[in-house]
Every structure is written in C-alpha cells, then in structure tokens.
Image 1 (cartoon, rainbow, N blue to C red):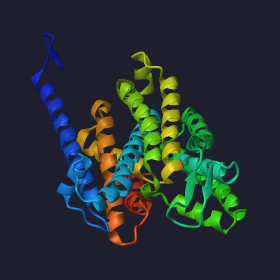
Image 2 (spheres, one colour; image 1 turned 45 degrees about the horizontal axis):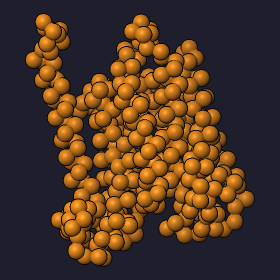
Image 3 (cartoon, rainbow, N blue to C red; image 1 turned 180 degrees about the horizontal axis):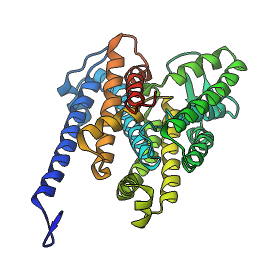
Image 4 (tube, one colour; image 1 turned 90 degrees about the horizontal axis):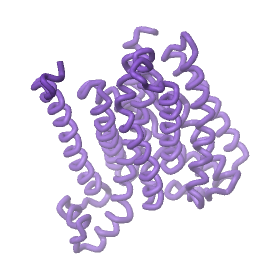
Length: 356
C-alpha cells in the first residue's frame, strides 16, 4: 500500500528518493560533461576559463570568441537535440507499445530529411554550398521545418494506422519503418540526381548529422519547439503509465488512448523534423537512450521522461565530444558514432525478443 492513513509509506518515499537521486546524479554528470565539451577540442581551454567566460568574467578575447561562437552553441545544440530525440523515442515506444520504436527506426527521420532537402533545393528555403562547413544556409528555417514536418506526417500516419490494426507486431512496425526509410531515401536520391555539384555535396554533408552546423538562431528555434513538446509529454506522464498497463486498462481509467497516441506521434514527429532540419539525421539516440534509462530508473514515466531527457542529452553530447577528439583536428559527424553505438544495440533488442 502506498497510503497509510493519508500519508506516503516509507517504502514509497524511499522509492521516490532513489529515482530523484539518479536524476540528480545524471544532471551533475551532464553539467560536468558540458564543461569538458566546451573545454576540449583542437584548441584546449582550461575549464576554469570556460566557467569564467560563461559567467561573463573571462579575460582572454580569443577564448571568448571560441566559446561563444563555436563551442557553446554546439554544446547546447547537442543537449537540446539529444533530449528531444530521446524523449520522442520513449514516448513512441509507450504509445505504440513497441520497444523498437524511435523516429529513426520507423522512418520518420528519413521522411523529415526529404522534406527539408526539398524545401531548400526546390522551394528556395535555403542555399547550398559545396563545403562541409556551412553546407546549407537556411534563409527560412520555419519553412524548412514545416516541409520536414509535412513529409514526416506521411510516415507517422502510416505507422499510426498500422498500430491500430489487429495483429500488428512491433517487428511489423519496424519493417514498415524500413520500407518508409527506403522510400524517402530514394526520393532524396532523386533530388540528388538532378542537383548540381554544389547542391549534391551539400546534401551529402547535410545528411551526415552534425550538431556543429547550428548557430544561435537555430538553437533558439529548436529550444522553443522541443521545450514545448517536452512539457506536453511530461504533463501526460500518467497517461503513458496507464497505456503501459494495457489499452483496456487505460480506457477504464479514463485515458483517451487514441487522442493521446495521435497527438503524441505528432509531437514526436515535430521534434524529429526540427532536429533534422537544423542538424541532419542523427540515428539511434531515440532507441538507445530509453532502454539504457529503463535499466536504471524503471518504467515509471514520472521519472523516465526527465531521466531520458538528461541521459539523452548526455549521450549525444558525449558522442559529439568524442567525434571532435577522435581524429582531431578533423571532426567526425556525430551521427557516425551514434550509429556505431545504436546498430549493435538494435540487433540485440531484436534478438532478445526471440523473433529471429
């Protein structure tokens, strides 16, 4: 019993304290990692100088330029994108009741990438250059995000319809996601076929997935969209807990399952669209992080959603820092490392279900 004469039992208080302790530890680790991420790179900056500069007390102008114009926006972009993608993954896994669900595995990221590329190449929402740094300059970021969102809705609608069919298994949803990813990848290749050399190079660099390309303007837009979506997800944490207990049980508790599922998928698609439009396709973060956090915190969405946001941001930030240092002074796209991490885990999850 959780309640004894109107008060919480000691066991339940200890349960809450343990979860809160894990969240606090993750937040502290995230802050330390962010400090190291800003400090490390081709130019090493002392951590205390980083702290002083962020607090407005820095004295070295060279370091201030590096921190404020390069390192800090890159670090914050990794935090925002990682938190958004990971929470989108955990919500999709809950509302679809599919442990293999994520924007990447269900083809939503590829659909968003096609829409964003279409908006830039055909409708003039940006400019493409044949260089990796600044390969795509978005003149109208909202138009690019809107186009990415519209094309992602196609993939989202198919997945939602499939989830409502009797006998639809998690594996069938993932196979549908593979088919959708192939479809939109082919559409993107069609655009590449008609592109000139500069546009082709830019589209290739763009699809790599790299948080270094986002500046302060892109970061502000991403933060607003993703922040609102995360607040919505956390506000419906009890609904996701009820859905995890079964659709009939959730309906018995008064949860409007179909509405929660539809709005949740739309919000997850919007997060994926915003991230893809500004930093490219970053795979497996929404798949890997929820399962890692579940092993530590459990399935209670009151703690799972904030925990996934913290550890998702930590995962992407750590991967971005490692990509920056692995072949320094060359910088690997962060999507390379996330895919190396995510692909083996994805295979393990499928094998764990005993369906191969």
